[in-house]
Image (tube, rainbow, N blue to C red; front, side, top):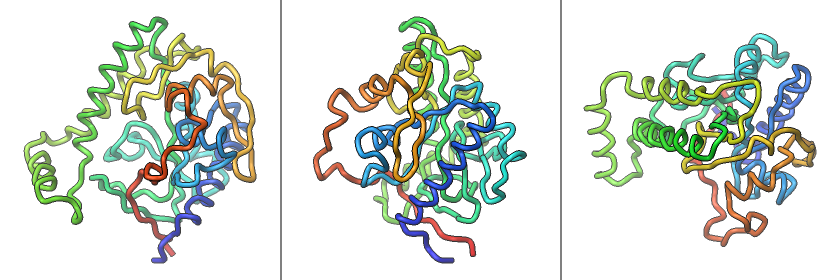
Length: 270
């Protein structure tokens, strides 16, 4: 199989994002660019030059509809939506839109082989008070840390003691531990599920720290350039980026921090 170059991956993801945008428009589903993709749209009008992925978010109700209908109604046969509902051994509770013409080897312990993908994160209600939101995200972060441990993988290039710790964890973890943690995370994320956004919302399936966003930031959207296309960002994008990256998000980080943050290889199947 021929390896997919980084530039080819980025083009494949961009084409997938265009398809995702069209599908959401056709089915009246709300979505927003988020994370580094949102920052790239605002700061670079496209990919962050050293970034290697695309992140989108959908209010939970729209996300659930998308997850239910995409695989049946998409007109592009080489795209598929994958979540733990479709693949019980998937290592996260959020979903991924996958280009099935490719296959990926990730530094994650999972029997599910994906291809080039977009991360699709549900935007969850966290409560109407800051106290509620902080309590819920605190519980979710504890689950996320446990899940991260379950996803550790033995890597040939890693230190021996790191791999020994991974093997020990795998040996003594109860069978089905990861599935149980994902189920708990998904269940807890739905605690305040409603068609209406609460005062505080967030992406707890993706967050590695406590990130409280305001529901009002997602009441409408703006369309901004991203590479040669244009996509949706939340009307309150400035508040989101300040939470994600701090008030200096428009400034470039030092050169030593301008690095990709994923570890994987991708090949074309044919």
